Length: 457
Image (cartoon, rainbow, N blue to C red; front, side):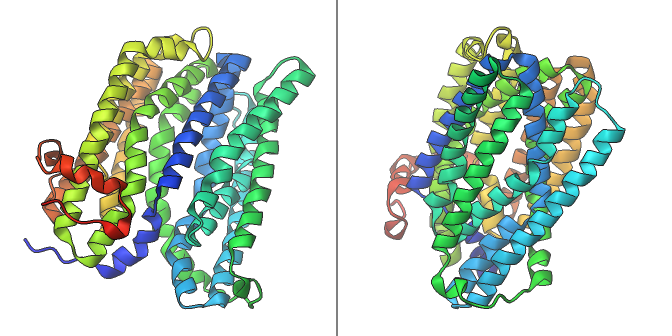
């Protein structure tokens, strides 16, 4: 079957997948900082308070994505075009209107949830912490948007420097100061520290966005094409929203049906198991733009080879991480504090899901590059429904183990479904990356500059 690239879809989605070695370094360092900060918070507070905190943060993350209305991805779609055409009025317009819509939507959503929480009070969860997490949403949504504004202007490292590296360091610093003043750290105090750290981070992000915005755009009268931007952003919100719900449904369901302490144990297990997907994330960040370039040029041999190379490069280190976590997961969880090693069963199950995720390869990336984001959205929507149904069915009976089973089942579903879609539509069999003899030779391509990429012979 002869494949014809879709230039429009590729050109639109390419900026969404831009990555670099600098971003990979920021990502790895940020993951270490975030993981280390969570270990400190759990040790300082204990499982119950930590559970209340992570539940409120997870809820806030979902609300921040929803209130963003898909605009961060729309910014990535439109801004490069405005810059290329020197359409400074359009550039200033989308930046200003995106901020306005994000603030309005996030405040409205936070107010709505405040009313809901005042009527329906979750029995086992701390309502004050939930309310604090709810009103963190406007700042979190704006932070997501500011990152993508800088990213869309090709300031990739700066885009993620502050939210990924500075924010967790600031949060630990403020939490330590509050702990020193009060003699202890509670979920409420940690949420206050989170307000301080995110506020400082947001100010720094806004300053960077203004600096990297071309001077001609800063002096131009904004032109607003709100309907056009929302038509593009809302479908993209479905993919992002479903993915975030898939990654948070287990914890949210667990917090509703089980004590906060169990949610804390599960969050520690999930964060630890997530280390198994770090390699795939880093390789995707480097391989994504090369895949996009190959597809846009119609170099299908290169595209196929690189896609299977990513699988091979990601899966073997991920398997090594999985073996380490299976063997020493209990001891690793014990670093979070007394009793956290009880989350080992959930950890062992979640590691399987992350290993499947690595073995499946960059299926979401390929679907978006090749213009199959609508099909991906449907798959994620079905996987989200399955995940929620399994969580509601299993969590009340099995607790954290049930949440882990539901998460792994849905993760396997969307990975295998997308893999089948790619095999059927594109003829690319990603699993062959584990046995193709050209793969080891091609693996070095991931570490060459994009412009010098050549196919293996």
